[in-house]
Image 1 (cartoon, protein in one colour):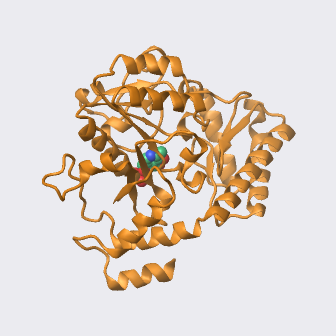
Image 2 (cartoon, protein in one colour):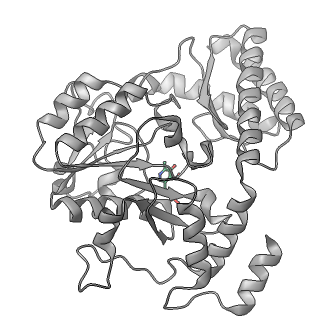
Image 3 (cartoon, protein in one colour):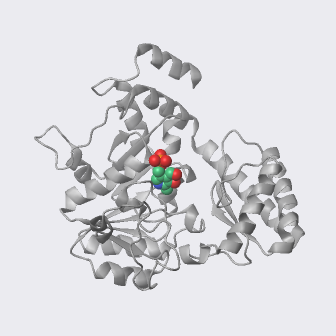
Length: 367
Ligand SMILES: Cc1ncc(COP(=O)(O)O)c(C=O)c1O
């Protein structure tokens, strides 16, 4: 990897035109999943989700997007809506409010975001029906860590696929994190293909990246070769050859064998953390799938954002727990979620479970 990147740096880091490195990498990623007819690269997951939403609007000529309450999709005004909704502003479960994250977000942006609850087919479809003629797309993350790291239910995903097909909207999967889950992304756990997939993180091999992959006719809205594109997509460093070489090198290494090994480490991590919870006899549980896990300080796993939402007191206990993990040498995000890396070994997982056990014992009196 270091040698491949070093060699590319010698040749050049940014050009105004496409490069062979870009084409070869595009072919590799498209070869991993039959839903990827074409791909365009950008520089971050935020940009990939933004471009996916704009492509859906351009394709359908409609303004609104639908997203799941509490799910994180980067910083674009529309995509971030209701990511941090609170009990005092999230509204009725039957009609969740569109809540801004950033101060000063234009109200008209919120008006164009339709918020649906996770894994609740009936409520979600009823909300979507109310906006059926204006919705460009439904955006979901199949294993969203901020809403509990519960896999999207098969019937929920199928219902959204059917609804979007019947109503002329597109289905977008945000696989910025979850692409790691199988050789072609978490979507290969399901019998459903999206129209567009947003990619990021791992496909850059450690360099800034995003990707928009999808159906050829949808991707055509970004094609500048037949007159002005309905959605012109460009960017100074998009598809720069350093990222392309780094990403391609990393993803060639992330072959089926590597995916299987990482997912087996994930199973080991969830089992061992589950065992630590039993030994500590604390009211806690662990969720996740593939190479991802999340620890909850509650007996039952939350089923959606509202259930995963922590009161101030519970958040303080959780924060102390994450602090104890840190003291034990484990740096974990504030939601208690872990994403394993191919550099890790079984020993690392065992060591991690030992640290979790110590931390659980420390917070036991407060749970
Ligand atoms: C699911 C998801 N979508 C989008 C993003 C945004 O990606 P980036 O940080 O590269 O802008 C993230 C980042 O954590 C993410 O987890």
